[in-house]
Image (cartoon, rainbow, N blue to C red; front, side):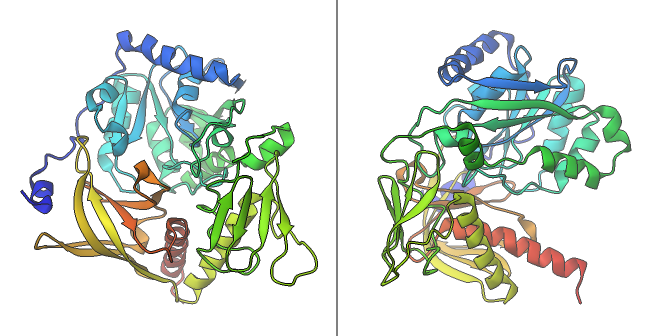
Length: 427
């Protein structure tokens, strides 16, 4: 059977199944898995206004690393919760994840079924619904884009909204290098919206409250707390989010080694110190002074965003690249489809190819995605982006060195904002 035939005949993940209440017999198991890991990292939870809050409530969590789920379990003890989890989290363990409260979601899709499941958790079961609305691990330790629909969902839920803003999780194992760094953990656990406030506040006001609660900057936190990361390889992988040279502005020429990140085009090198600050340590070209363009890593990341925003504003953003494609229709595993052409342009995404004689086309208009999910060195296969429909998720691995999934993610967000602005003000 060819790959497209296997994909066409594959049983899709049952997204409509009612969420399980976390089985009582499994709750001690989740505690046993979670507590040793968070105790080892000296987790401190700062509780503000949550003393009288009992289920049902909506728990919004920042998303930094896999250990987030363990911190969440510790924060809500002794209550049970249902967690919204991406489909790849269910691979090979669907029933276990369902039994401990997992609810499947394909990232960056509009899924009305999820609203019904959230209501089931909150109003029928009377439990906690834990949601990670950034929908991806933070790229450089700062807040990702939050959807406008979040405020509307909170208002419809009609239950208190609690915020879990975690610190140290990203520093312990950033998505661009998952090796552990033994950083202490902290979390701010606070009530941000009561049921009464939700009833009279507008959706815009609710979104403003939520976005304010979601603000974080892990490098600023590291500096303020004096957290030293002494591992000699602390910069390795940093060229994944920082793909463009801050000095010569060349793209895809960055590399890292040990505690340094450099540009192969202009030969400039920066070192990251034990408190997470960058400093230039090698000259570029014949430059006399060692100027550090951005000592704060998130500032470098936002410099790249500004470069992409300019390309979008001028109507010249365009990427076309050959890519290997895998599909994930269910939790049984990936189906390799083969090579295709990925185009990301002012109109959005197009994925087009022929898989074993069967034509394939996936189109995702710019306004259909406010962001996209990317992975670096995903399962040892390379960098990828994933695009989803309600039935399938496609993992797309660009095969050109003159591309960056980080830039694709930034462009997705900037294209959405650009087209939304045009829709609101066509003039």
